[in-house]
Length: 157
Image (cartoon, rainbow, N blue to C red; front, side):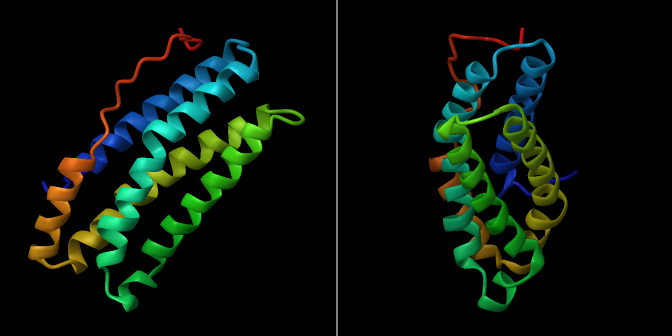
């Protein structure tokens, strides 16, 4: 899908998020202990996903007119960001069987990226003015987090 230059770095981060989801799935498929995978999930959320969510909420959503911010394309994004927080808190708690939580995390991550790429970003590109999009581009340039991070336990290999 063609993404405007203004939001392209968020799309790059989505590509990285899908790579992380595949790693989690591979780890579960190859029998990696769920506690090892959970540590990776918590790390990725803290280092990459949480800053990504904050950029979306501060740079994009706060600039939307209240009517536009109430659109399902936007409200679902916010709801899913909160769901990520709930899932990660449960994973961090570590009680019980982690597998369903990890599976839910991967499922939500994939659905969330698809929603944002197909509905949320095009909606923002449509309703935000050129001046706002240019400001957003500058903020994304400053806040963009590189997807390559050092993780010394490549359980997915």
